[in-house]
Amino acid sequence: MQLSVDHDSAVPPYEQVRARIAELARAGELPVGLKLPTVRALAEQLGLAANTVARAYRELESDGVVETHGRRGTLIAAAGDTAHRLTAAAAAEYARHALRLGVSEEEALAAATGALALVYGERARQRA
Image (cartoon, rainbow, N blue to C red; front, side, top):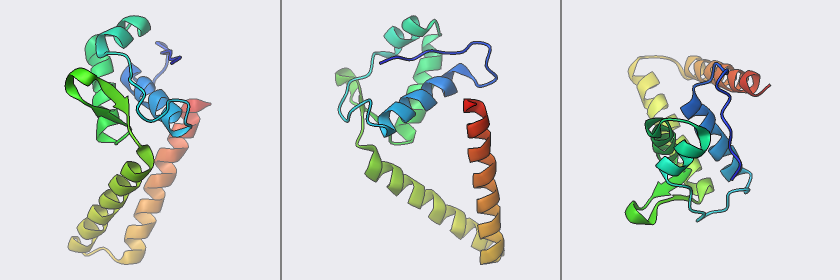
């Protein structure tokens, strides 16, 4: 697995690690079930603190990209189902929250669309 961190980037190192592993997993370059390096090994390889890599791994697990199995290590998860399930749950929670706030469906959709454009546009700028 080829990873590198741009220490001069405005993007925090943990986010660079998280985003790259997620990207490689989505592209199938990190196959389901592949065991990732230990936190310490990857931290040493990248010249980062172990806590930085641990945070990236925690966020990847939260996103359903990896699964941690104690002594068996951290493995690439079957991302499709998990990612879609987590996205649908987050969208449903957002819709319930917007309804409780008295926001119309059109306003809630416009807010979500604006947020998606902002976040995905920012991500594209970071990659450029």
